[in-house]
Figure 1 (cartoon, rainbow, N blue to C red):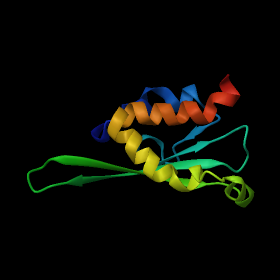
Figure 2 (cartoon, helix red, strand yellow):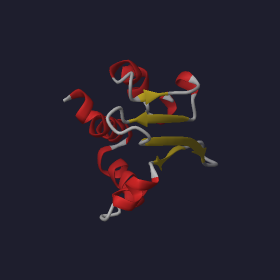
Figure 3 (tube, helix red, strand yellow):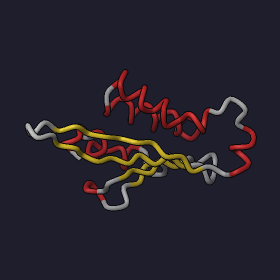
Length: 114
């Protein structure tokens, strides 16, 4: 995780947002699940992998997967759920890994913490 610049996970997001952030395999987990306490069945899964080129340069690759109830998909007229993976990639490019993850967690947890 540290090699990816994901120290945000080690710095306590599981502790800061215990109802929302889950690392199934601890710090070495290949994914992070963010669950909404206020919207049962709504989950965002961040999956990461590392690519290393022939010169030894490390490239973190993060993807966002959504898991939402069918009814939510039907009601999503603006296609926010469908476009979430692409929007997340844009957010990564603008904010960087740690800030993008923090932003995503905070936005999903806003109702339960605010």
